[in-house]
Length: 498
Ligand code: MN
Image 1 (tube, rainbow, N blue to C red):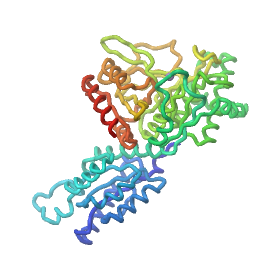
Image 2: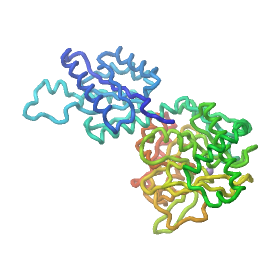
Image 3: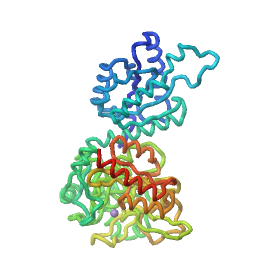
Image 4: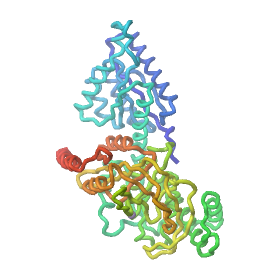
């Protein structure tokens, strides 16, 4: 469903006419070499497209117009091989609607100490050319990423790749459609928000659909389609003994397959990229969609439970930024704590809806009663999650702005097996520890719902937040509550004055 190779980042080199034809030809040749190296690098997720060296305001303006209109261009990589007087960039940057990264690199890695002459100095001017370009971007208050490093080095390429992935997610978000089945969980605050502002600032639209419309799709699913789907489940998952032995539970599993196929048909027909459900509005559906949601998320759909459209859109964006990387991404909720002072931990889970892309091994397909909602017993995938580095991210609406909060965590094994817990679950230790992380998260107003990922990094999300021009807060090993409270107060002033 998500293929980043469809997307392009345009490589744009700034220069000027003063150096003469020969030098400009050299600049173009060098740029093409960098484009080739990036294109061939396994680190780079998108197509890198070489654009002619820009030497006049008219050329720059035209290039920016073209980038705005190009459907597959996710943004610009700008590089100043030589000096490029930056008043030439004002008109273009003023109308540029795509994100850009300033790649502050130099064609020659090293100074040729014994041979350096003024020709070398004329050609290799990134050190000051990049500063002139940086000034105009800052003067124009433009958000952009600055990557410093040699173009063949892995760290520089990886920083560029991170920006490209964020740019793909931003591109995907523009015009994305999120379907909200039913409305919100009644009286819940954090899952609400200004959908008009979200569409204006973030680019995606959220619209509600009566559950009856979904039920129409579900009721059209044929028995033979359900048979095929059950065969696929049998191939893919471990089926619990209880299900293989009970006709009642098999009936519920068939119902779950029917819901998945109906929901999938609905989402495909409307070209949606994400959706929400709520257990308080399931009118006409036999059970809460559990397995269906888990499987749709694994295919790249964003999801938020209880009407949480902001998390649905965030999960989708995280799916796009991490496409092809190791590790999965899921909707998540901080569910319950282990407050052992030696190592305080969080058990993350949801009623059912955790994506199997983060599963450690083959998930078990089970059917159990749900103690909330008053519906039939829903099918769900049950699994533990791979240990290692991960993060939780949330997006909230503060009334005058959107705020993203990210907390780095370490997934650890449960202290003991959890034989009576019939849902997918993950245990983590947040950075810097649960006491500080939970206090900071709560002071910042972070939601109980998150996008959880073992492939997306804080840097991906920071780049994305910059493109969206929204507030970004990180909770990690450097977080201290006193400093964090100051950051919240400073940001309050900054965002009130914008
Ligand atoms: Mn929830």
